[in-house]
Amino acid sequence: MENFWKGNKVRLRAANANDYGLFIDNNGDFDTETARRYDYIDFPLSNEQISKKIESYEKEKTNKDDYLFVIETLDHKSAGFIITFDCDSRNGTFKYGLFMLKEFQGCGMASEAAKIMLNYYFNELRYNKVNVYIYDYNTPSIKFHEKLGFKYEGRLRQMAFSNGEYHDTIFYGLLKEEFNTANPLKAL
Image (tube, rainbow, N blue to C red; front, side, top):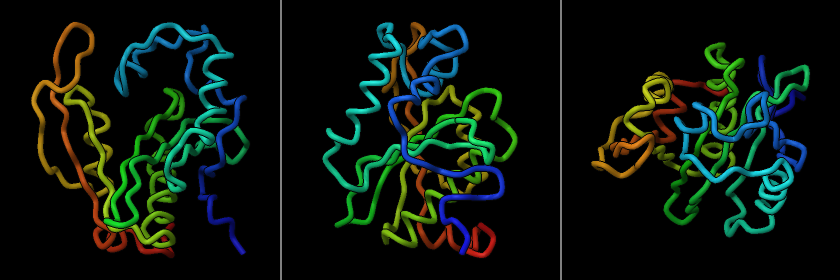
């Protein structure tokens, strides 16, 4: 039997304390342009602090379906991560975020990793809808999610502050039926 968590380019695995390298650049800096695009500028953190944050994630989460996946190449190089959160099994909704290291962007790995995760949440855990929130300046993420089939659902004005400016948060959603129509199980 094939490994459910493995695709043609990547596999998803559990995060561990040694994965702090995903959160910093080659110089050991946490303040990177990529981090700024995906989140916000934080106070400087040591490798130990980042490692402890990863380690404590499993202990502190309030929902069993909230999860931090590491996206790994088939030759075991960490390429990024996917985090699921605000999982509401009663209403069948959840949110997620995705991050890829620069050298692994644009080669289909993020798309395959997202499809593996979405397939699991929709077809194994029976969730019906996923939501993603994107800052208006993150054009690559907007294009990525539209290509995956996410639908634009709205905008909240000036919800994020980064690099001295306020930015809108854009909401996208994808239903299980839309995902399964565009991504038949045999194609994953």
